Image 1 (tube, rainbow, N blue to C red):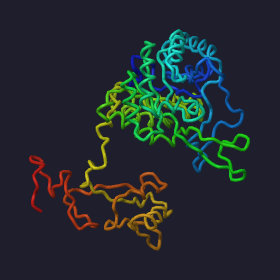
Image 2 (cartoon, rainbow, N blue to C red):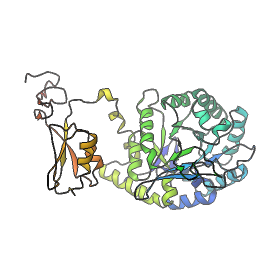
Image 3 (cartoon, rainbow, N blue to C red):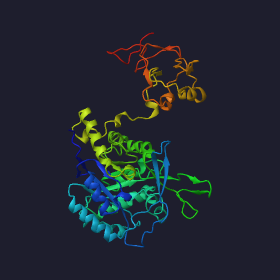
Image 4 (cartoon, helix red, strand yellow):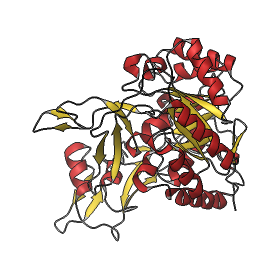
Length: 434
Protein backbone atom coordinates (compact mmCIF):
# COMPACT_ATOMS: atom_id res chain seq x y z
CA UNK A 1 0.00 0.00 0.00
CA UNK A 2 1.17 3.49 -0.83
CA UNK A 3 2.23 5.59 2.13
CA UNK A 4 -0.04 8.64 2.38
CA UNK A 5 1.87 10.15 5.31
CA UNK A 6 2.52 13.85 4.78
CA UNK A 7 5.40 16.02 5.97
CA UNK A 8 4.61 19.61 5.03
CA UNK A 9 7.07 22.14 6.48
CA UNK A 10 7.99 19.53 9.06
CA UNK A 11 4.32 19.28 10.09
CA UNK A 12 3.44 15.62 10.02
CA UNK A 13 -0.02 14.19 9.35
CA UNK A 14 -1.25 10.70 8.43
CA UNK A 15 -2.45 11.90 5.02
CA UNK A 16 -2.22 15.08 2.91
CA UNK A 17 -5.90 16.02 3.33
CA UNK A 18 -6.47 19.00 5.61
CA UNK A 19 -9.78 20.75 6.22
CA UNK A 20 -9.50 24.37 5.12
CA UNK A 21 -10.21 27.31 7.37
CA UNK A 22 -13.99 27.61 7.12
CA UNK A 23 -17.22 26.81 9.03
CA UNK A 24 -16.29 23.09 9.36
CA UNK A 25 -13.27 24.01 11.52
CA UNK A 26 -14.88 26.57 13.80
CA UNK A 27 -14.98 24.59 17.02
CA UNK A 28 -13.75 21.58 18.96
CA UNK A 29 -16.84 19.47 18.26
CA UNK A 30 -16.47 19.66 14.49
CA UNK A 31 -12.70 19.20 14.43
CA UNK A 32 -12.87 16.20 16.75
CA UNK A 33 -15.47 14.61 14.46
CA UNK A 34 -13.19 15.29 11.50
CA UNK A 35 -10.20 13.65 13.14
CA UNK A 36 -12.27 10.65 14.16
CA UNK A 37 -13.35 10.30 10.52
CA UNK A 38 -9.70 10.27 9.40
CA UNK A 39 -8.71 13.78 8.25
CA UNK A 40 -4.99 14.43 8.38
CA UNK A 41 -5.20 17.98 9.67
CA UNK A 42 -7.23 21.15 9.94
CA UNK A 43 -6.76 24.86 9.52
CA UNK A 44 -8.84 26.30 12.35
CA UNK A 45 -11.34 28.92 11.24
CA UNK A 46 -9.80 32.37 11.16
CA UNK A 47 -9.28 34.03 14.53
CA UNK A 48 -9.40 37.80 14.99
CA UNK A 49 -7.99 40.09 17.64
CA UNK A 50 -9.57 40.95 20.97
CA UNK A 51 -11.39 43.95 19.56
CA UNK A 52 -15.00 44.69 18.64
CA UNK A 53 -16.98 41.45 18.33
CA UNK A 54 -17.52 39.85 14.93
CA UNK A 55 -21.23 39.86 14.10
CA UNK A 56 -22.42 37.60 11.29
CA UNK A 57 -25.71 37.93 9.42
CA UNK A 58 -28.63 35.93 10.79
CA UNK A 59 -30.11 35.27 7.38
CA UNK A 60 -28.81 33.11 4.53
CA UNK A 61 -25.01 32.96 4.37
CA UNK A 62 -24.58 30.86 1.23
CA UNK A 63 -25.57 31.20 -2.37
CA UNK A 64 -25.21 28.21 -4.68
CA UNK A 65 -24.63 27.12 -8.26
CA UNK A 66 -26.03 23.72 -9.24
CA UNK A 67 -25.60 21.48 -12.24
CA UNK A 68 -28.60 20.16 -14.17
CA UNK A 69 -28.79 17.17 -11.81
CA UNK A 70 -28.82 19.46 -8.72
CA UNK A 71 -25.20 18.56 -8.00
CA UNK A 72 -23.60 21.40 -6.07
CA UNK A 73 -20.98 23.07 -8.26
CA UNK A 74 -20.16 26.06 -6.08
CA UNK A 75 -21.06 27.93 -2.91
CA UNK A 76 -20.98 31.67 -2.46
CA UNK A 77 -20.13 32.42 1.15
CA UNK A 78 -20.77 35.73 2.95
CA UNK A 79 -19.87 34.44 6.42
CA UNK A 80 -17.16 36.33 8.31
CA UNK A 81 -14.30 34.98 10.42
CA UNK A 82 -15.15 33.24 13.69
CA UNK A 83 -17.67 35.06 15.83
CA UNK A 84 -16.79 32.98 18.88
CA UNK A 85 -14.67 34.56 21.66
CA UNK A 86 -10.91 34.37 21.09
CA UNK A 87 -10.24 32.76 24.47
CA UNK A 88 -12.78 29.99 23.75
CA UNK A 89 -11.17 29.19 20.40
CA UNK A 90 -7.69 29.16 21.90
CA UNK A 91 -8.76 26.84 24.71
CA UNK A 92 -10.38 24.41 22.28
CA UNK A 93 -7.40 24.45 19.90
CA UNK A 94 -5.12 23.56 22.79
CA UNK A 95 -7.38 20.71 23.88
CA UNK A 96 -7.79 19.23 20.40
CA UNK A 97 -4.04 19.32 19.76
CA UNK A 98 -3.45 17.56 23.07
CA UNK A 99 -6.04 14.90 22.20
CA UNK A 100 -4.79 14.39 18.62
CA UNK A 101 -1.03 14.93 18.63
CA UNK A 102 -0.52 13.08 15.32
CA UNK A 103 -2.78 15.46 13.36
CA UNK A 104 -1.80 18.79 11.86
CA UNK A 105 -3.25 21.81 13.64
CA UNK A 106 -2.84 25.11 11.80
CA UNK A 107 -4.47 28.30 13.05
CA UNK A 108 -5.74 30.88 10.56
CA UNK A 109 -5.27 34.49 11.62
CA UNK A 110 -6.55 37.89 10.54
CA UNK A 111 -5.95 41.04 12.57
CA UNK A 112 -5.44 44.73 11.73
CA UNK A 113 -2.27 45.75 9.91
CA UNK A 114 -0.23 46.88 12.87
CA UNK A 115 2.72 45.01 14.30
CA UNK A 116 1.47 44.94 17.89
CA UNK A 117 -1.81 43.25 16.96
CA UNK A 118 0.08 40.46 15.22
CA UNK A 119 2.63 40.11 18.02
CA UNK A 120 -0.12 39.77 20.61
CA UNK A 121 -2.20 37.12 18.86
CA UNK A 122 0.85 35.08 17.86
CA UNK A 123 1.85 34.72 21.50
CA UNK A 124 -1.61 33.35 22.31
CA UNK A 125 -1.51 30.87 19.44
CA UNK A 126 1.94 29.58 20.37
CA UNK A 127 0.64 28.77 23.83
CA UNK A 128 -1.87 26.32 22.34
CA UNK A 129 0.82 24.05 20.92
CA UNK A 130 -0.50 24.51 17.37
CA UNK A 131 1.79 23.38 14.54
CA UNK A 132 1.71 26.58 12.54
CA UNK A 133 -0.25 29.63 11.42
CA UNK A 134 -1.95 30.54 8.17
CA UNK A 135 -2.25 34.25 7.40
CA UNK A 136 -5.65 34.95 5.87
CA UNK A 137 -4.85 37.47 3.15
CA UNK A 138 -7.67 36.31 0.95
CA UNK A 139 -11.15 36.80 2.42
CA UNK A 140 -12.93 38.98 -0.19
CA UNK A 141 -15.94 40.15 1.79
CA UNK A 142 -16.75 41.79 5.10
CA UNK A 143 -13.23 41.90 6.51
CA UNK A 144 -11.65 43.45 3.42
CA UNK A 145 -13.80 46.54 3.96
CA UNK A 146 -12.00 46.85 7.29
CA UNK A 147 -8.56 46.79 5.72
CA UNK A 148 -7.93 43.07 6.25
CA UNK A 149 -8.24 39.88 4.20
CA UNK A 150 -8.09 40.54 0.46
CA UNK A 151 -7.33 44.21 1.14
CA UNK A 152 -3.92 42.98 2.31
CA UNK A 153 -3.57 40.12 -0.16
CA UNK A 154 -3.99 42.42 -3.15
CA UNK A 155 -1.04 44.62 -2.13
CA UNK A 156 2.32 42.79 -2.29
CA UNK A 157 3.99 45.37 -0.04
CA UNK A 158 1.44 44.66 2.72
CA UNK A 159 1.90 40.92 2.33
CA UNK A 160 5.65 41.25 2.75
CA UNK A 161 5.31 43.62 5.71
CA UNK A 162 2.88 41.49 7.71
CA UNK A 163 4.73 38.28 6.94
CA UNK A 164 7.91 39.84 8.29
CA UNK A 165 6.11 40.73 11.51
CA UNK A 166 4.85 37.18 11.88
CA UNK A 167 8.29 35.65 11.32
CA UNK A 168 9.80 38.18 13.72
CA UNK A 169 7.41 37.38 16.56
CA UNK A 170 6.82 33.65 16.10
CA UNK A 171 8.80 30.44 15.73
CA UNK A 172 5.89 28.61 14.13
CA UNK A 173 5.84 27.78 10.42
CA UNK A 174 4.03 30.53 8.53
CA UNK A 175 1.72 29.81 5.59
CA UNK A 176 0.42 32.80 3.63
CA UNK A 177 -3.05 32.27 2.14
CA UNK A 178 -3.35 34.08 -1.19
CA UNK A 179 -6.37 35.67 -2.80
CA UNK A 180 -7.15 34.78 -6.43
CA UNK A 181 -8.64 38.24 -6.95
CA UNK A 182 -5.43 39.61 -8.46
CA UNK A 183 -4.04 40.01 -11.97
CA UNK A 184 -0.89 37.94 -11.42
CA UNK A 185 -0.71 35.42 -8.57
CA UNK A 186 3.09 35.31 -8.79
CA UNK A 187 3.47 38.82 -7.39
CA UNK A 188 1.87 38.12 -3.99
CA UNK A 189 3.70 34.79 -3.83
CA UNK A 190 7.02 36.54 -4.36
CA UNK A 191 6.10 39.10 -1.70
CA UNK A 192 5.35 36.32 0.76
CA UNK A 193 8.76 34.81 0.03
CA UNK A 194 10.50 38.14 0.61
CA UNK A 195 8.72 38.41 3.95
CA UNK A 196 10.05 35.00 4.98
CA UNK A 197 6.93 32.86 4.51
CA UNK A 198 7.53 29.13 4.83
CA UNK A 199 4.75 28.32 2.34
CA UNK A 200 1.72 29.69 0.56
CA UNK A 201 -1.80 28.28 0.36
CA UNK A 202 -4.16 28.99 -2.51
CA UNK A 203 -6.66 29.79 -3.64
CA UNK A 204 -8.93 31.61 -1.26
CA UNK A 205 -12.43 32.33 -2.54
CA UNK A 206 -13.25 34.22 -5.75
CA UNK A 207 -15.31 37.43 -5.68
CA UNK A 208 -18.78 36.51 -6.89
CA UNK A 209 -22.52 36.99 -7.00
CA UNK A 210 -24.16 33.65 -7.71
CA UNK A 211 -27.54 34.92 -8.80
CA UNK A 212 -30.26 37.54 -8.67
CA UNK A 213 -33.78 37.09 -7.34
CA UNK A 214 -35.86 38.24 -10.31
CA UNK A 215 -38.90 39.01 -8.15
CA UNK A 216 -37.30 41.41 -5.67
CA UNK A 217 -34.25 42.17 -7.86
CA UNK A 218 -31.64 41.56 -5.17
CA UNK A 219 -28.45 39.47 -5.31
CA UNK A 220 -28.57 36.07 -3.64
CA UNK A 221 -28.26 35.23 -0.81
CA UNK A 222 -30.63 38.04 0.09
CA UNK A 223 -30.71 39.73 3.50
CA UNK A 224 -33.76 41.96 4.03
CA UNK A 225 -33.98 42.85 0.35
CA UNK A 226 -30.25 43.43 -0.18
CA UNK A 227 -27.32 41.27 -1.23
CA UNK A 228 -23.53 41.55 -1.22
CA UNK A 229 -20.75 39.89 -3.15
CA UNK A 230 -19.20 36.92 -1.43
CA UNK A 231 -16.50 34.33 -1.93
CA UNK A 232 -17.02 31.51 -4.46
CA UNK A 233 -15.69 28.05 -3.62
CA UNK A 234 -16.26 24.47 -4.72
CA UNK A 235 -15.71 22.45 -7.92
CA UNK A 236 -16.37 25.48 -10.14
CA UNK A 237 -13.18 27.25 -8.98
CA UNK A 238 -10.86 24.25 -9.40
CA UNK A 239 -9.57 25.27 -12.88
CA UNK A 240 -8.65 28.71 -11.55
CA UNK A 241 -6.90 27.16 -8.56
CA UNK A 242 -4.95 24.63 -10.63
CA UNK A 243 -3.66 27.34 -12.93
CA UNK A 244 -2.53 29.57 -10.08
CA UNK A 245 -0.81 26.71 -8.26
CA UNK A 246 0.97 25.78 -11.50
CA UNK A 247 2.06 29.38 -12.12
CA UNK A 248 3.82 29.52 -8.76
CA UNK A 249 5.31 26.03 -9.12
CA UNK A 250 6.77 26.62 -12.60
CA UNK A 251 8.09 30.15 -12.10
CA UNK A 252 11.83 30.06 -11.22
CA UNK A 253 11.53 32.75 -8.53
CA UNK A 254 8.87 30.79 -6.61
CA UNK A 255 9.52 27.22 -7.76
CA UNK A 256 10.93 26.16 -4.37
CA UNK A 257 8.09 27.68 -2.35
CA UNK A 258 5.97 24.96 -0.72
CA UNK A 259 2.29 25.11 -1.68
CA UNK A 260 -0.85 23.96 0.07
CA UNK A 261 -3.43 23.55 -2.70
CA UNK A 262 -7.01 24.73 -2.21
CA UNK A 263 -9.98 25.10 -4.52
CA UNK A 264 -12.64 22.58 -5.46
CA UNK A 265 -11.00 19.39 -4.21
CA UNK A 266 -13.92 16.95 -4.19
CA UNK A 267 -12.35 13.64 -5.26
CA UNK A 268 -9.04 11.83 -4.95
CA UNK A 269 -8.41 12.71 -8.60
CA UNK A 270 -8.74 16.43 -7.85
CA UNK A 271 -6.20 16.03 -5.05
CA UNK A 272 -3.80 14.11 -7.29
CA UNK A 273 -3.99 16.89 -9.89
CA UNK A 274 -3.08 19.54 -7.32
CA UNK A 275 -0.19 17.41 -6.07
CA UNK A 276 1.06 16.76 -9.60
CA UNK A 277 1.07 20.51 -10.25
CA UNK A 278 3.31 21.18 -7.26
CA UNK A 279 1.13 21.29 -4.15
CA UNK A 280 2.60 19.49 -1.14
CA UNK A 281 -0.82 18.83 0.34
CA UNK A 282 -4.44 19.87 -0.23
CA UNK A 283 -7.13 21.60 1.78
CA UNK A 284 -10.82 20.74 1.44
CA UNK A 285 -13.95 22.66 2.42
CA UNK A 286 -16.97 22.57 0.10
CA UNK A 287 -16.86 18.80 -0.43
CA UNK A 288 -16.95 18.25 3.33
CA UNK A 289 -19.82 20.73 3.67
CA UNK A 290 -21.69 18.90 0.90
CA UNK A 291 -21.11 15.27 1.86
CA UNK A 292 -19.88 15.33 5.46
CA UNK A 293 -16.56 14.36 6.96
CA UNK A 294 -16.94 10.72 5.88
CA UNK A 295 -15.80 11.70 2.38
CA UNK A 296 -12.23 11.43 3.66
CA UNK A 297 -12.44 7.64 3.34
CA UNK A 298 -13.06 7.92 -0.40
CA UNK A 299 -10.32 10.53 -0.78
CA UNK A 300 -7.65 8.46 0.98
CA UNK A 301 -8.68 5.12 -0.53
CA UNK A 302 -8.79 6.53 -4.04
CA UNK A 303 -5.46 8.33 -3.79
CA UNK A 304 -3.81 5.27 -2.25
CA UNK A 305 -5.13 2.99 -5.01
CA UNK A 306 -3.95 5.40 -7.71
CA UNK A 307 -0.49 5.62 -6.20
CA UNK A 308 -0.27 1.83 -6.01
CA UNK A 309 -1.18 1.58 -9.69
CA UNK A 310 1.50 4.12 -10.60
CA UNK A 311 4.11 2.55 -8.35
CA UNK A 312 4.44 5.62 -6.14
CA UNK A 313 5.54 4.66 -2.65
CA UNK A 314 5.03 8.12 -1.13
CA UNK A 315 3.31 11.43 -1.75
CA UNK A 316 6.64 13.07 -2.56
CA UNK A 317 6.95 10.94 -5.69
CA UNK A 318 3.75 12.49 -7.07
CA UNK A 319 4.31 16.11 -6.08
CA UNK A 320 5.32 18.28 -9.04
CA UNK A 321 5.41 15.57 -11.72
CA UNK A 322 3.21 17.59 -14.08
CA UNK A 323 5.03 20.89 -13.62
CA UNK A 324 7.62 20.36 -16.43
CA UNK A 325 4.74 19.81 -18.86
CA UNK A 326 3.07 23.16 -18.13
CA UNK A 327 4.19 25.67 -20.74
CA UNK A 328 3.11 28.82 -22.56
CA UNK A 329 1.06 28.67 -25.75
CA UNK A 330 3.91 29.72 -28.03
CA UNK A 331 5.87 26.62 -27.03
CA UNK A 332 3.16 24.14 -28.02
CA UNK A 333 3.95 21.73 -30.87
CA UNK A 334 2.04 23.06 -33.90
CA UNK A 335 3.07 19.96 -35.86
CA UNK A 336 0.93 17.73 -33.64
CA UNK A 337 -2.14 16.79 -35.74
CA UNK A 338 -5.23 14.94 -34.46
CA UNK A 339 -8.71 14.18 -35.80
CA UNK A 340 -11.97 13.30 -34.06
CA UNK A 341 -13.18 9.69 -34.27
CA UNK A 342 -16.72 8.53 -33.44
CA UNK A 343 -17.28 5.01 -32.10
CA UNK A 344 -20.50 3.97 -33.82
CA UNK A 345 -21.11 1.19 -31.31
CA UNK A 346 -21.21 3.69 -28.45
CA UNK A 347 -23.04 6.47 -30.30
CA UNK A 348 -26.63 7.03 -29.07
CA UNK A 349 -27.46 9.25 -32.09
CA UNK A 350 -28.36 12.26 -29.95
CA UNK A 351 -26.82 14.64 -32.47
CA UNK A 352 -25.20 16.98 -29.98
CA UNK A 353 -21.82 16.70 -31.67
CA UNK A 354 -23.37 17.54 -35.05
CA UNK A 355 -25.32 20.53 -33.73
CA UNK A 356 -22.32 21.95 -31.91
CA UNK A 357 -19.94 21.53 -34.84
CA UNK A 358 -22.38 22.60 -37.56
CA UNK A 359 -23.64 25.70 -35.76
CA UNK A 360 -20.65 26.91 -33.78
CA UNK A 361 -17.50 25.27 -35.09
CA UNK A 362 -16.12 23.95 -38.41
CA UNK A 363 -18.89 21.90 -40.04
CA UNK A 364 -16.73 18.79 -39.70
CA UNK A 365 -19.42 16.24 -38.76
CA UNK A 366 -21.90 14.82 -41.27
CA UNK A 367 -25.33 13.40 -40.48
CA UNK A 368 -26.95 10.75 -42.67
CA UNK A 369 -30.67 10.14 -43.06
CA UNK A 370 -30.53 7.38 -40.46
CA UNK A 371 -28.71 9.75 -38.05
CA UNK A 372 -25.30 8.21 -38.40
CA UNK A 373 -22.65 10.79 -37.59
CA UNK A 374 -19.18 10.77 -39.17
CA UNK A 375 -16.19 13.09 -39.04
CA UNK A 376 -15.19 14.94 -42.19
CA UNK A 377 -11.40 14.92 -41.90
CA UNK A 378 -11.01 17.62 -44.54
CA UNK A 379 -12.83 20.08 -42.25
CA UNK A 380 -11.81 18.85 -38.78
CA UNK A 381 -9.36 21.16 -37.01
CA UNK A 382 -9.22 18.92 -33.91
CA UNK A 383 -10.81 21.48 -31.59
CA UNK A 384 -12.42 18.55 -29.65
CA UNK A 385 -15.63 20.47 -28.97
CA UNK A 386 -17.50 17.33 -30.05
CA UNK A 387 -15.68 15.31 -27.39
CA UNK A 388 -16.71 17.75 -24.69
CA UNK A 389 -20.40 17.98 -25.60
CA UNK A 390 -20.89 14.24 -26.18
CA UNK A 391 -22.86 12.71 -23.27
CA UNK A 392 -21.27 9.26 -23.73
CA UNK A 393 -17.78 8.86 -22.30
CA UNK A 394 -15.17 7.73 -24.87
CA UNK A 395 -17.71 7.70 -27.71
CA UNK A 396 -15.72 10.45 -29.44
CA UNK A 397 -11.95 10.47 -29.11
CA UNK A 398 -9.05 12.31 -30.69
CA UNK A 399 -6.67 10.22 -32.80
CA UNK A 400 -3.22 11.45 -33.72
CA UNK A 401 -2.24 11.26 -37.37
CA UNK A 402 1.07 9.47 -37.90
CA UNK A 403 3.97 11.39 -39.47
CA UNK A 404 3.82 11.08 -43.24
CA UNK A 405 0.03 10.81 -43.32
CA UNK A 406 -1.68 13.30 -45.62
CA UNK A 407 -3.88 15.73 -43.71
CA UNK A 408 -7.00 16.03 -45.86
CA UNK A 409 -7.71 19.50 -44.50
CA UNK A 410 -4.42 20.98 -45.69
CA UNK A 411 -3.43 18.48 -48.36
CA UNK A 412 0.02 18.24 -46.77
CA UNK A 413 1.85 15.38 -45.13
CA UNK A 414 1.92 15.40 -41.34
CA UNK A 415 5.45 16.23 -40.11
CA UNK A 416 7.08 14.55 -37.14
CA UNK A 417 7.52 16.28 -33.77
CA UNK A 418 10.63 18.05 -35.04
CA UNK A 419 8.91 19.50 -38.09
CA UNK A 420 10.45 16.98 -40.50
CA UNK A 421 8.44 15.13 -43.11
CA UNK A 422 10.12 11.87 -42.11
CA UNK A 423 11.67 10.73 -38.85
CA UNK A 424 15.44 10.82 -38.38
CA UNK A 425 16.23 9.08 -35.09
CA UNK A 426 19.96 9.61 -35.47
CA UNK A 427 19.72 13.24 -36.47
CA UNK A 428 16.28 14.56 -35.47
CA UNK A 429 17.05 18.18 -36.32
CA UNK A 430 17.97 17.42 -39.93
CA UNK A 431 15.29 18.24 -42.48
CA UNK A 432 14.53 15.65 -45.09
CA UNK A 433 13.44 16.27 -48.63
CA UNK A 434 9.83 15.32 -49.25
